Amino acid sequence: MNQRPLLTPGNMRAGELIVSVVSADIEPLTFTFEDDGIVSNNPLPFLVYKGAIDVDNGHPEKTIEGLFGANGWGDMWRNGVYDYLHYHATVHEALGIARGHALIRFGGNSGEEIEIAAGDVAILPAGTGHQCLSASRDFSVVGAYPPGPPVEITRATPANHAKALKTIPEVKLPNTDPVLGADGPLVNLWKRPALEA
Image (cartoon, rainbow, N blue to C red; front, side, top):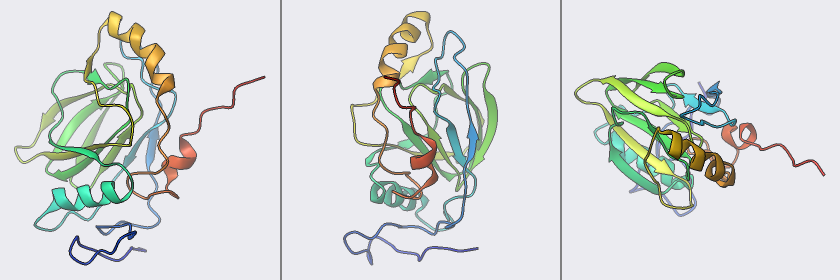
């Protein structure tokens, strides 16, 4: 397995990208979720990197935060995933799993139930429904957003769906993949079709 060198906050120099060990040839799983009338989701693919980040250390949250921050996804939080269906209509979101495991339904009630575990990263295009169905007691997530407007937590209702259909297409595409940076798969997978003249 090709790996990038391990850097820590103490030995990083300005401009160095990776704060954790990441497989150089890792490819994400991709899913596309349809609008179900309550959760609009997004025509851009939802991405899951399985085992992307080496979090086998005493500070996995810091490892993920360093990686996301180095790749331009700097607005971050630490917690879990809400146990009710919600989405973010104004921003894209990365979820780095630092500890434990959980069963998350992505894509709304008609979406996919996916087991995620420490070292995995899920990247949700704006509007992607998500809800934690079960989690280990030690489940810990670092969430992050690329530069843009503040995050809004949106519940799945008909009124919110109508608003989301207007805001989601306006959300700016990120310049980088939160795991692999400017050359990461997200940059190529998340392209909007050119508008016809």
